[in-house]
Length: 444
Ligand code: NDP
Image (cartoon, rainbow, N blue to C red):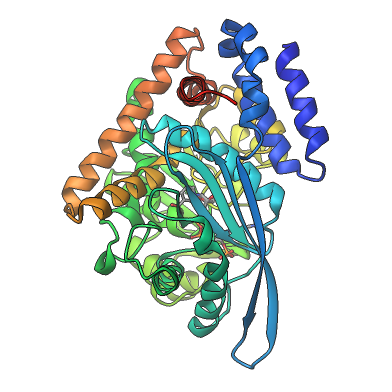
């Protein structure tokens, strides 16, 4: 469609050197074509697609810190506040050496549509830093987090922007960030989510993204007269999302045969034990290799390709573009039928196209990993009324939110006759909500 192609070309021209952002804009906008066609004149006139692809505000700043040996280090921090049509900005912070403006923009752009799809009142943002928390002492992590917040605190707040965790940012980092926010502002308020339950955090936040991915998968499988029970599952990564997807999949009767980190993956045909891998990763900050060293019957594949492991359902939970075209071909030839995207944009564009053509059912990250931001939003409301719900209540609420997400996708699919194209359905359902809010608030 000409209008969509024109906008994509303009975005690429105006954001050179940001391939992940280009990929996200292309994927989302091309899938919106049926919805854009319906209102082409209005969208062209009001420049809605151009507007959505341009952040409302984009902040980058220096983050100096001192290591345990007194050596000074310098990293770059980002916060990209993409769209506030639906509510305060919301989205995670990523600490990883690969972080750059283009990656934060791709994540922030995706976040607009994901947050809209939850049906909740939250805008889209993302942030992070080029810092690598791996191998750092607690003192060094604290030093970095305090320096990062010394600039970020000016730009966030419970009714402005509420960051959470992402790769490299878990409960420990959020705690240090929150402590510094409080020191600088004198305010104990919900300016961050993912806090410890001892100081304003929500039950189920740690589990939310992984659990949500499995709840949505079960909903989709029901629709296909199938169930997760008895499925052989390959999960990549071994961080927050991977661990709790593993736990919930196991509770629902599946066998998760792998998890991984950036060094390699482990395989056990009888399943990976949740409590052992959780202890190694969360308490001991170890590597997946440590699991294989401890548990007999588990093999470790240094630098191996996890996507070569035969399975029924694959749940990538590590990072963007982790599934290449070659890996996609391997998954299909090994008979895998379903993919639930735990990580954001885990497939390259070529991989997605191949998997779709091969008839693989894809639950896109926008829907599959929305449980995290949804429970973060429940944390925001608990913070504002200072009343806290139980694990059971919040788990039930998360389950309902995931079912509602599924329904929204199916409604969009039905309206635009998209069959079971969950990617297009999720994008259209999110887009329509944001576009309407922008129109009602006045575009310019
Ligand atoms: P964590 O930092 O907890 O874990 C990330 C895992 O992925 C680690 O095992 C890490 O291995 C691996 N990994 C990260 N980068 C790479 C890489 N470049 N190559 C290979 N392996 C890598 O992150 P999360 O679990 O929080 O996030 C995982 C994904 O889920 C991300 O795409 C994130 O955006 C998405 N997500 C997370 C949400 C959340 O609530 N946490 C919410 C929504 C989406 P290693 O330790 O070796 O680096």
